[in-house]
Image (tube, rainbow, N blue to C red):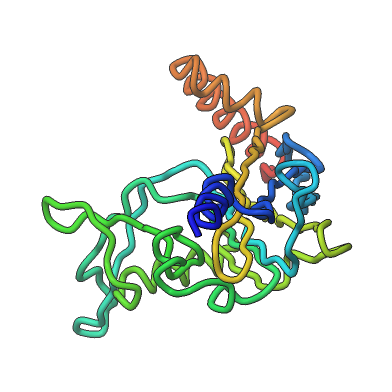
Length: 258
């Protein structure tokens, strides 16, 4: 009996005869730098990835679920509520959203509500309804409930502009362990650094996580104008005013009636 107990203890301490399953993610982005020019109409990036065992001879356990969250540079934005007063629409109230993503895309292979339990989704901020969007309410800054009118309106506006989106069909599996995801960038995408967070789930639990990044920059004449306005503000303002005067003078000459 003592020998059996000793053997059982050794097996438990060494993890048993069956190694614990462990996965790791390897991802690659089709383009890590997007250049915005005057002819830029948007771009679709592709994220490829594979699920590999963390250690040799470790068994994988498909089927897997993937959630990819893409966040743009933070911005502080304001949502206003209008009301009709004496036949005129006026701003009655407003709410400031502090350092929220200027771009937010949640991509998955199935609806996020079917991937994990609600408490797991809230803790990991998976999905637009669970992502933290801090607001300035008086002297405090905090997130609100998902059905808060200002939060709902903010999400609707950003979704209409193509800057916030959630898709349950954007991630597709090429094999049980190889996947691809389409990341759409609209024409009005903000410039800056973007973070891409990839989460892997199995049986409702997070089993692996990795991240990568991309950069959206202005290029060509637009970048030259932006740099001039930022680095030489006074000279840029004088040249702009001079161009406006010359344009007005040239138009008066061309369209002058004798």
